[in-house]
Image 1 (cartoon, one colour):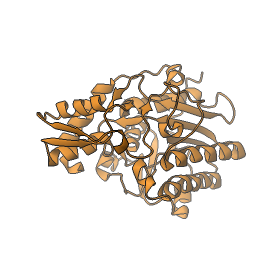
Image 2: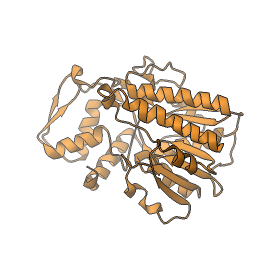
Image 3: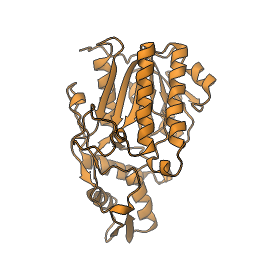
Image 4: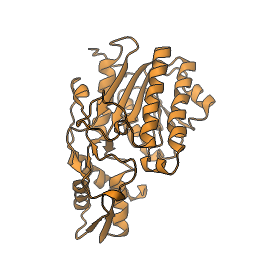
Amino acid sequence: MNSKSIFNSKTQILVTGGAGFIGSHLVDELIKLNCRVIVYDNFSTGKKIFISSHLGNPNFKLIKADLNETKKLSQAMKGVDIVFHLAAHADVRSGFDNHFIDHEQNLEMTQNVLEAMFKQKVKKIAFASTSSVYGDAFIHPTPEDYILRPTSLYGASKAACEQYLHAYSAYYQIETWIFRFVSFVGERYTHGIIYDLLQKLAKNSHELELLSDGSPKKSSLYVKDGIRAIIKAINTTNNINKNKFNIFNLGHDKYLTVREIVELIIKTAAYSNVKQKWLGKKSNWQGDNEFVLLDTSKIKSLGWQTQVSLSEGIVKTVRYLQAHPELF
């Protein structure tokens, strides 16, 4: 295995979506590793406060632009050693009503990134994919070689992105890492069940209306554990084989039911006597997956382990959001 880190003071990195929840944590880690980091973000969901501590750092550069601004994107790629492509439309539910947003913001923008890389001869990319590419899997934990059968347009767009990455990798010898995430939790979290429930509880702490019957099973991963996994995977597999195309599941080896997650959120947020009004299975949003648990034996074989438990990650997220009401 390759023990020499590719992340050092000579490495120039472009992070799309680098001002977002996951992207900003990745940027923190890359700056710690003395890399030169370019954040490319349109701030549609990213927040400047998440990266503000780096603004005076000579190793940090911020480009406020959209991925459809292809000239700016190509210019930003000059001299880059590796791209982390995290920018995406991540509101899974909205694809049910808007049939084009995932295609336009995920697949088309990913091709823009790949084209800019091709033009500037950038030869490494890491891509944020999703457990949603598996759809309602029949095998749990779900391994990386499981068939892709997404049940949402978001999942379908990410699966299509993976195929484009594979084709560009084969065409132009681009070393590629695909990371299929479960839901990440932790500081700077601004989207998902914890955020939604705290918002609802702030409006009405007596009754909480909830989708489904509480039985769906969900895994999640603390964001800093996820970032460590990404860095570990890239460092360990870099240039082992020429033109390598790598796929890694990232998740926790445990899960909680939605009901257990809701009860933990309520307890951590210090609400009491909250009436939970479950609307039943048919109320759940179309495209949601009943059981999300990924096989992470591949990333674990490289020496990575989670350091934060499933429950602790949720607790950290609740406490962070309560301490930062401005994010609502």
